[in-house]
Image (cartoon, rainbow, N blue to C red; front, side):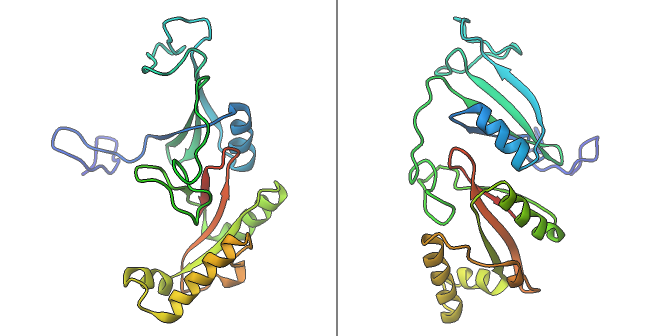
Length: 210
């Protein structure tokens, strides 16, 4: 169904979900996060909220009440991801250290705990793959690239019953573990289902440009 603005929506009789408003992640250094997401990924910073460090009641400058556990001095920044979607980050003065392998994977090819966010994927135009490659290299962002094929996806759906595809997947896992860039742009063909760049932000959050 559509709302009055023509936005496709889904949901219950009482309200309709209209897609993602924002994703809220946590960072250890807001300045480094702003530099990475604005300079490397080109996402404009559109809103900054913060709790004054000397405010004993812990209110954000916008008047929103901080939840229990959010100390005065907390920062909450929003970036524009495009299409009306936003990516938000918290910085907590009392924040806990990252827990790779538990709250987040060590890298996009590894596992993480149930209930955690594994990685965040952003959509990019298919004709910009070479530009993305050059851009990440220019900003010295380590990454690996995989041209996921339709046959590879099919092998996952059949519990890897296709020996050739199964071996291909295992070989990729070995190469990723060794830190080798897996595929190149020459591997993108008509059989490619998803062409993906995998890398990390300053806090080790696994990101993908697909």
